[in-house]
Length: 79
Image: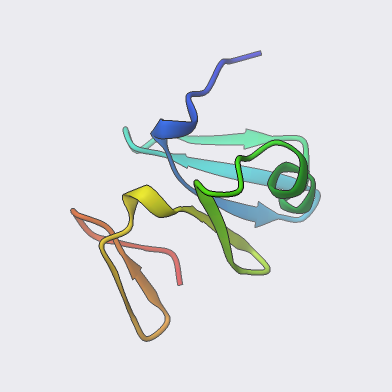
């Protein structure tokens, strides 16, 4: 097991019955739970928002939205 700080998660991406945590340092951590379970049971409501059936974002890491894109300070994350 690996401990992950919520503040280091940029976004979560569904991958079948798994979920990929995309981290600030560029790492991608795959966990054996679906996004629905993680989003509904493990994440604080005010910090993460579901923006698509396959994505949830850390709202404190977002600088804006443009069309189907979510902007971060450094680049664009997900669609």
